[in-house]
Length: 185
Image 1 (cartoon, rainbow, N blue to C red):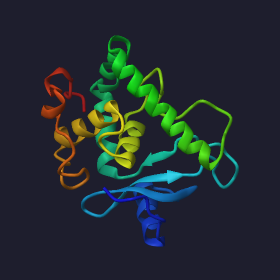
Image 2 (cartoon, rainbow, N blue to C red; image 1 turned 45 degrees about the horizontal axis):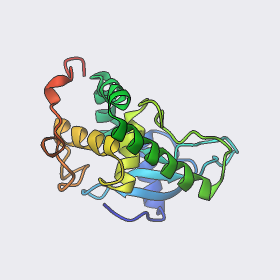
Image 3 (cartoon, rainbow, N blue to C red; image 1 turned 45 degrees about the vertical axis):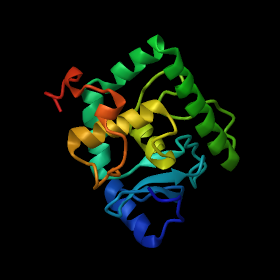
Image 4 (spheres, one colour; image 1 turned 90 degrees about the vertical axis):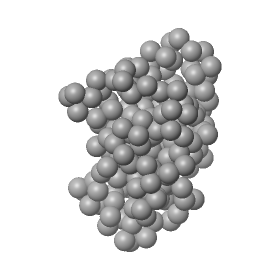
């Protein structure tokens, strides 16, 4: 994992290709894959045209966005959200992550909202956001993001290419992929 870097023109061209449109409001490459590609960008809380954009970290790497979508179809979000209601420590961890991202975004510009992204702090609405936030901040920052990255890494064989080789594994985290229905992905 790299430190947040000012994007080069080449980085912005790669992100444009990844997204299929020009990148907007990018202030940093928040995560670069082990194979060197920009994969998560840090964005301004407002886009250049003034449109609010409260998602601090945005996933751009095609491999990761495709896998996040597959995991959503396999009901990983539903599994995570059910656990928020049953595991108070997990819910508190998720709430702390929400507060952290909200504070980081508000350091740049306070939008006057309590939305930090991905359904936080009560719901799990978007694995793209959880994966982006976890990759930008590291595996020890919040549990559900760490789990989402591990599931993506191990389900899609992305470890060492899009995700660091040393990211926690599903086995280390006690996750059984057999509980998810990947038949429609």
